[in-house]
Image (cartoon, rainbow, N blue to C red; front, side, top):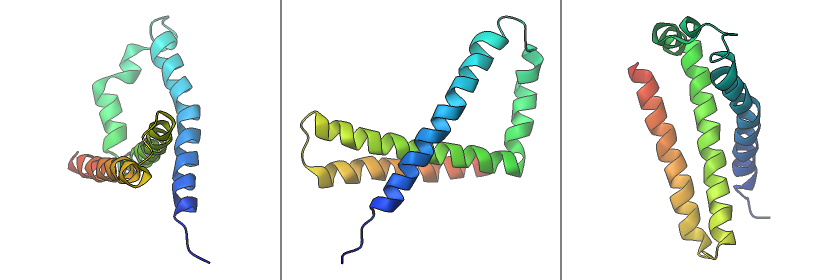
Length: 115
């Protein structure tokens, strides 16, 4: 039986969808409601405080993991959407979408290492 890359792609797709589903509402509530309504102090989200979290090795690792799975989730969604709108050359679409996700992953790693 031939080997398939589908389990890897589906795993990254599912991880990205799950991570986005959990974190995006938290960010929306925090930045859209908690800070403007005074439930959270703006100094809690100051540049220095956020930078101290992101500059810590564990913070970088978590941010890199979140960004990576979101890139791959978006790549797979874009690939399936391209097929749905009539772009049926799946090989080219796959190379472009997953190539962009791979490049974004490398660029995110380089950016986070430069902090």
